[in-house]
Amino acid sequence: MAIEQSVSINSRQLSKIGRLPEKISSVYIGSDACEHLMATSDDIDKILSLGKNPVMLLPVLTDFFLKKACDEIEKTLKFHNRLEVSANDIGTLAFLHRTFGKDISISIGRILTYLWSKNSVDFSREMGERFSIGYFETDEANTANSMINAGLKTAFHYPYRFYGVTRTCYYTKETLESCPRQCGDVFVPLGDGQVLWRGNAYYTKEGKMPEKMPNRLILSYSLPC
Image (cartoon, rainbow, N blue to C red; front, side):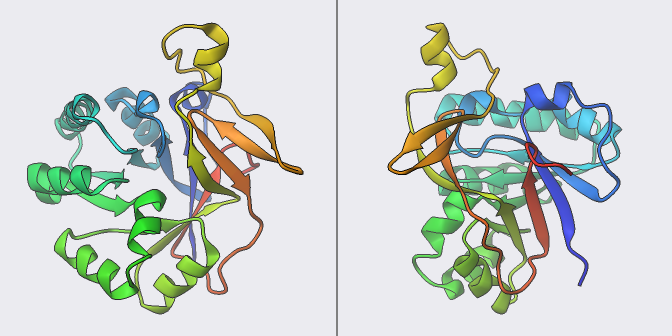
């Protein structure tokens, strides 16, 4: 089975890209942990102009940012027939499904997949059928193995695993300003090792892939494509 290859980037990185390798077929844009890094319709347009399928990454959203996300989705759907969205909370998932129906394809982000996987694969399958889910994203090899074996379409984030969130953003802290949307990658010490500080989330590097290949592999843009 051929694996679809994707790349995950933010708006700042996207603005510097002139092209992407042929083997990359889809682009995850935004952040699954920070509301301020949400993709805009202009970001979606640029990804489409590069000949790639855009996937709008959404973190857990407050009401204000949920409305903002819907506004950007509506702008996109005025000119394009369809959009894929990755949701990381049940409220956002249910609202988007109710509001946009089949005009968008909803995938389950790795944070929400982590929570659902604590129930059972059957629970994930049931929810997937209820909301017409496209992919289940994860960065945990064991979770991916279970979903792949159960026949669920699986997207695997590599090589960084979600570790946790922080409300102290490195860049806001350093500039003493409101969000500058200029996030980069900062490695900070944790115990005897280091964690990646990106936006307002921490990630650990994990080299373990699932035993079986996922349907989609999502690479961090900091890696060579």
